[in-house]
Length: 459
Image (tube, rainbow, N blue to C red; front, side, top):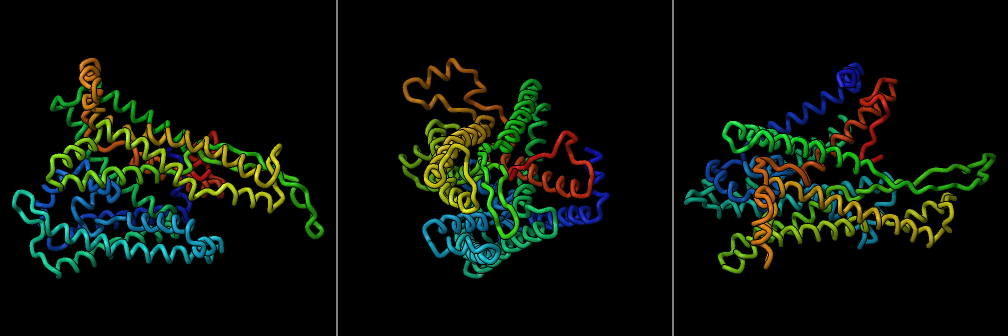
């Protein structure tokens, strides 16, 4: 590890890229301390303390706790991510965008430009909604907005939109002049900063008696095991062999080589969990503001650890895993490209048979990836609140009486570990190490691992 870090800083170009990236991340963290003008900080804190398990709490994790403090970076990079996802979905139903996406580098630039326009539009809509919502917040009779009105609304929209565009610019600079993965590194920094205080609270439980040493050892071992499991699955691939037939092009003999088509186990990445969490937590958040017994009962059943929430969460993750992969990966296009360059899968006829074969392999991998995402996504709820088996009809009381207490009450962990956050942290760390290793290998330096190159999520 020490040699790896020393090698990084011994290369002038790589050293400049690493330092440049760290400086821009520091700028991002400094901006995360600047509050949006016109707000009452104490009233805002009281309001968001009651929404930690809601849709706002989920979004707050992505923004690096900027939403709960309502800083100038409160919207974070989620508008940019949402715009990118919308553009991907539109490419399926809008032939114009699909044709542009296939135009190479020029098409990529146009899609990026449309994504930026979409980001601004989403920021204006979300910023306006947040400004109006802040004016209606009145926790314990203390208004959150000091001087409500159109002046505050316009200032808030301008501030939040500018903050998101600045973050997007930081991400692009890190990708071009830093070590890459700019937007991902910004999300990574926000999540890691939020985990540090939570770890401190968990350790302080040893002094107060809320956390026993044995329970802490078990949690640490579980964290290490989960990280190792995620690394193993994220690097997992199903390699479909492809052979290219020999052909004469000009005076040269082309082809005659064998390669493979890598299909990842987790092709969808973290997107299915984001979709599933948004779909479940957003209605629950809305129902919290409806003062009706039925609405309150449904909202209670959609809390972390409740059987209805767990069931809907599992079904949603599996559904969105298949849905998202069906959008971003088209077996027919892959089959056509392989056949176009004279390739074929041994034992499989080109054309429809190749498409069906790739689709069948991808479907099996997608199911495995969906189960993997379910297991990882349910871990934080288990650590935080456990599984509320007592709410199950008929057998709930019997299960609660015969299961250990930690199973339905959780481990009293004070930070959000697992699911979306751990997938992003581990995935971005793997990709970053892979890119740095590639730079070291190009210059004949030792990589992080002497036994071989670490493979990131991209292979």
